[in-house]
Length: 442
Image (cartoon, rainbow, N blue to C red; front, side, top):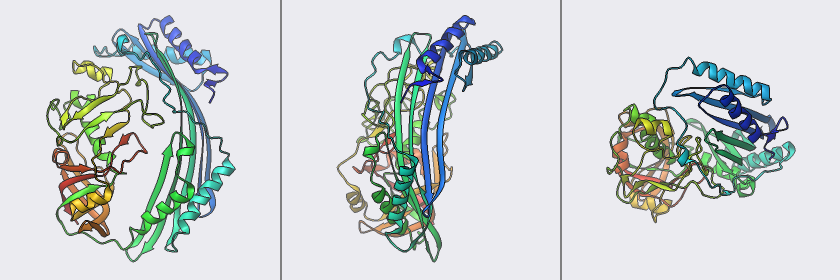
């Protein structure tokens, strides 16, 4: 896509903002300028339910006056509006308390190479064609079985954007990216009421998306397999987190080793650097340079060069997740994670999903979790769940309306295997995760 808006390149808008910040007396400044455009279409029961176009732009400027800082933003990229935003930020900064840890990331850490990560693959899809794809997807789901009698819709979306980050170190980083997706949510009824489930795909390149028919059929099969669910007796059982929800487990890890939680001392993993927190076969690492991946980036939100690095090696915590502010608070160095991690990867073992079931024998597969019952301060974990009962190494029947509970420390150390059915549709790449035991309340 064009990296211009109002006939002004994003880089030029960023340069105007930084020059204006310097002119107004700021000792340092950083700016992000973005432009995104896209289309989203949802059809439900063969009718178009929503059709949305978006075309958004914005500039956010942060100014520093010594150790004080403030930010302001604008969606108007004319030079006079940019100047007004800088003036607003400067006015706030002059009334802000100084913070010895604030400031730009260190100049020596700025990215200097910008590899092509193949993140930009525009899809010239018209609204009419998007509607056709969504209708084909939903109809494919209805065609699987007459028990599929309702729908929450099928959605096609396509978005592309450009972003520039620049600061007064002289760093200017420019990137363009695309994100396309297709999803379908279907409904069936049984004696216990309504059951719903879904399937989706998401990719940088629309050519990499699964077909509309395949996604509709998978959504239908996922919905049908939830019919006639039973309850599970209260007890302690081994649990397999299916690959598409397993990333949530490792999201809790990242929350617990994030800089903000560490310097506030509000994490169950405080002072665990260099300690064993997983079994010794677990390797968790960042891969920021994967081609076409959703979490790839050459630099983080502060311009710091990203790098391939191990977070957990042989089960031992090797590093935290820090931006420059939290790193200074902790007397450490930023890990280039301003804005989050980049393609967090949990290495798989040799077992596929069927083999995981066989190895587990009897237990539960969790395919959905609900609720907010995770405490990062204590590690206590309690979630509503739905899934399947497993006996003799095979799925027997669906189960729902149960709760799984444990502590994240015990869950992490209790991992028996990570399957090779790797989920790649997000920023965390992991297979299904088998945990030795959790408390289950039916």
